[in-house]
Structure formats: C-alpha cells, structure tokens
Length: 433
Image 1 (cartoon, helix red, strand yellow):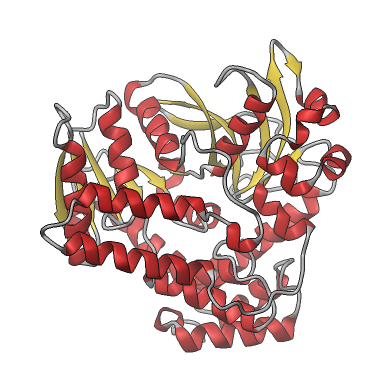
Image 2 (cartoon, one colour; image 1 turned 45 degrees about the horizontal axis):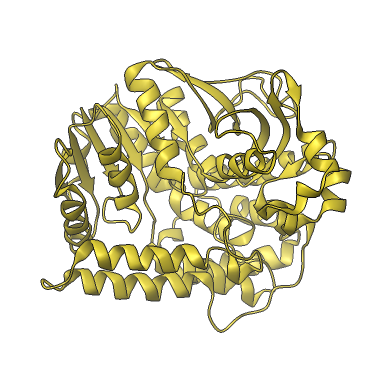
C-alpha cells in the first residue's frame, strides 16, 4: 500500500517514517512530494539512514510532481506549509507590530495562515478526488481544523484532521492519576487548539474531580500553566492554547520570534544535511532535540514535560492502522460535527473523541463544552467560516471581517491594518480584492 506525504521535504517527516519502521504496517511504499527538490533530497537521506538496519522498511521515492505522487495512493498525509517557515515569521512580525498575538495558528497569525493555505488545500483536495478518490487523507496542515473543513467540502469524511495536543494532554492527566497508559476514556470537546478535557473515566467512574481536588493537579504542564484555582473553577482541563484566551496581554515585537528561531535552526540543519560527509540521522536528531526543548518557551509556556513521545506521528499511524486493518481505535480527531457539539452545525469540523474503523472516524455523540466555552467556540468557528468565505470568493472585506471577529484581535481598524500588512508581504494573498 502506498502512502503519499505532501510536504515530504518537511523537517518532521522522519518522525512519521520512524513510526512506520517501528510498527507492523501495511505501508510498503512512501512517496514524498515537495515543491523544493533540495529539501526532498535532504530528508530522503535521513529516511535512508533510518531504514538502514530495518528489515522490510517501506521503500521511499520522491517527486516534485504532485499528480504523480497522488496517483495510486491508499493514504495521503497532507503536511504543507504555504510560503514555508518564512511565512510563519511574517505571520508573527505583522501581528506583533500591531500589538496582537503572533502565534501561527491562534489569532491574527492563524487567520493569515488560513487565508493563504485554504486555496492550496482546496486544490489538493480537488486533485485527490480526481486521481485518488479511494484514498484516505490525514491532514496535518495547520490551522488543522480550518484546513480539514475546507478539504471536507470536496472529500467528505475521507479527510480527517489530527493534532497531538489533546492526546498529549490526556497522557499527562492519566499519568497524574497514576493510571496505566491508555487506562481511561477521555471526554474532550472543542475546536483545534481550543478544547477542554471534561472527564477521565476508568471503571465507569469519572476521576477528573479527584484530580481537581488533589495535590497532583499541579504536577503536570497544564496544571502549572493555568493554576489549581482556575482549573477547579472551570471543572475541566483546557488545552494549553487556551492560555492565550484566558491570559490575554499586549504583545510587543521581540528580538527573536519562534518562527525566526525555527527558520534559522532548520536552515542550518538542511545545509548540514546537504553535505555529503554528514551523518544525516545524527544531524536531524540533534536539531529535533533543540526544537523540542524550546517548544512554546518563547510564548511563556515553558518546556514540555511530555518527553516520552507519542506525538502527531503516532496519532497518524494509529489512525491509519485502524482504517487499514479495521481494528477499532479511540482517538481525538478533527472531523465533521454531525450533531456531536450542540453549539455548532453538522458540517463544522470539531475536535472530539472518535471511534475509528475501516469506515473512517465516527465521533461519539453528546460532547460537552464548559459553560463559558460555547460562546468562545462559536466565535472562533465564525472566524474560520469567514476565512473560508474569503478564500472561496476572493473578498477582502470577508477577510477583514474574519480577522476583526477573532477574539484575540477584536478590532476592525486593527483588522484592516493586519490584512493590508499581510497582503503587502504575501503574494499568495493577491487574490483578496
């Protein structure tokens, strides 16, 4: 079976291939597609090193021809980044210059990222529908929920979005409760980067109230980030990205944003990978460790305390195996709502627990949001819908409306300046008129 990875020259692709080589999988061929041949060559070197001593490792090919890459695919991992990491830097800089959050998926940066990514994602979905209509598409591309919803308009339920934040939160909470890994059923609901864990069930009992009342509440990342008093008042554990909404502040330009750090680091890494004498796996692994050690630290969220792994590549592999082998799995995924969250319509893509079989991902019914969360979720979903409208119609006024409506912008004059600033820097936004 063929797996096609769009964005195949991306820095994190070896994580996916490493997960494939570490588990029994029906994948026999991995096709890497990227618009940058040099990055493809560099990442292929890393994958070759990973496969060196692994019997039956999937064969790897690479191409810059997207139609060639997609034709015959059983699964497609979409992990594109329109305008590369340079785009992330611009997302951050333009937002920070207006005193609003520059994070790439939340707030102004996320709206900009979506406006330039949705047209590309729609083109990919339309091509998959033509040349690989039976393929299952697993969307890694951020903003994950928004992009998945754009692709679902063309691929239906055959596109599923993933993010590792909910599963990582679940692992930390399960560990704090001293339960075995996978020893609990999680109630989680919201949008991508905007969700809450409201229940942890083991033996038919919700153990979350016990955690909220006990000293273990501050033993893990979210407990320290939000504080015991707030979590007890919420009666839920928010996704770490809710920090931006619960603790808004004025943002000012900094000497080195996260995007600038990653751009510099990855440029150095790819340059070293291009050297024939380099050890590609050692070079890439060292860069990955530096990246992980500083995750979200520049945003004031500190370093990860989830070093045992289990990132997005493992979520993707579990999802793919459940579909390919018809072995049911429970995963938190980005799928169409279908009545799961009462505050949203059926076609809205939400992030909720699902059961996965060969027929795809089916959300469990009756997901609940904290009382204060429904309005926030509706407002952010309205922003996403504004981005989809702007991308579909080319309406600059729709883009401004989407930007102004986001809770972390919340200003029409600032939104106008932001869209103007992003259009000045991104040729991909010339379609907005």
